[in-house]
Image 1: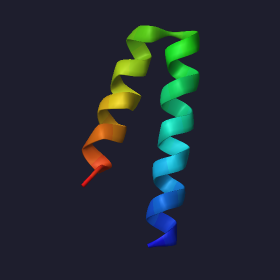
Image 2: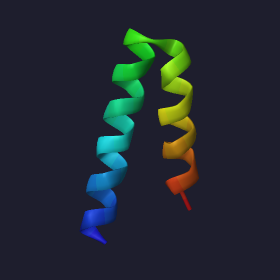
Image 3: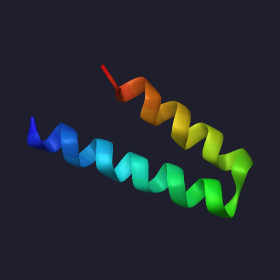
Image 4: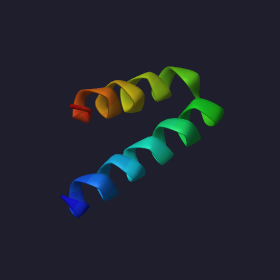
Length: 38
């Protein structure tokens, strides 16, 4: 359970960071993040 939460947090951080740096690349991270949500 905790590992899943950590992965979710890391994915969220990458999503936010990517959105700041490169919106096109962020779409991939954010889509991956959304797919991990229940």
